[in-house]
Amino acid sequence: MKTVKECIEDLRRCMTERVVKRVVIIPHISPDGDAAGACSALAEVMERLGVKWRILTCDYMPEYLRFLKHVPRLISYQDKPEDCRRLIAETDLIFMLDHNTTAREGDLEPFVREATAPRVIIDHHLEPDEEEVVISDTTVSSTCELLYTVITQIWGKGIVNADVANSLYAGINTDTGGLSHNSSRPETYRLVAELLEAGLDKAFVHEHLYQMNRLSRLRLLGYALLAKLKVTENYSLAIISLSKNELERFRFRDGDLEGLVNVPLTVRDVIVSVLVTERKDKVKLSFRSKGEVPVSEWTKRWFNGGGHLNAAGGQMELPLEEVVKLVEETAPVFFKEYAGIVKE
Image (tube, rainbow, N blue to C red; front, top):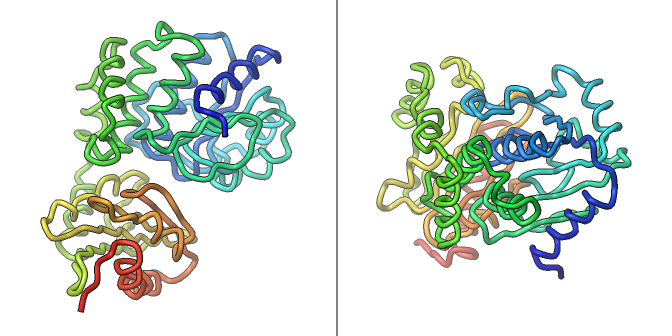
């Protein structure tokens, strides 16, 4: 198996041995802070190199991430499907950021599979697909942390300006819950220090990530914690479920529930928190845990998902009530087999 350094050299060769004038940058479906930060940072690097770029997404970026420099310029398949098809067909290189398979690209997947351009995965999730270039490291905090290594090893630290630094830090911060989980490597903090030296405006990023709430969002979060939070009797498991009607009642927008799943973990005896939300055509699940409780195994086995030890997600095409019931019914098996916790 190749090392990360060797895979980065593969990308260097890919970009020097062929004429790369245009690239397409694609995040996973329902992009989060790590995906958005990586896309914006790489777009800025491409722009500084004189390479034309486009960020394409099958849906939309959450509103709270639109402060990142290049996020407002993305093209959504929902608005311009033919433009997305054409740009993918004409590009010289396809960057797949913060996901390990084209299946995580939603409506864009068939166009990406048909494209003749090489595909480059830069990601920190397990079991990536085999593509022309795969730069994968599951030990890092985030794709943004890995991308910083890629950028600096190929083009040097001088190419990292304030816009790149702000974007990368936004991804690192959000994917670790404010550096509270999956962030115990000293290298992560050395990297943040280097981003500060490169011009990172930490106060600016924090303000836009955490201090730009709408009143309707605060009321939604308050309602979720007051009326919908349930802690199971037999297990240290917190579940919050929200229906589509409840979300509409509070004028829900993408990104409004960011961070909510982490809140129950602040309770001393809660070790796993699950957020279950009914969306347009599916039910989405987010899992978080403390310590060595591997919620990624829970989502992988029962909820068509995966992720990291302490942070994972899944989705189901079942009614909301049935999904919540499945979480409750599989909890005893999960806690016994994967966490070593047996309750009477």
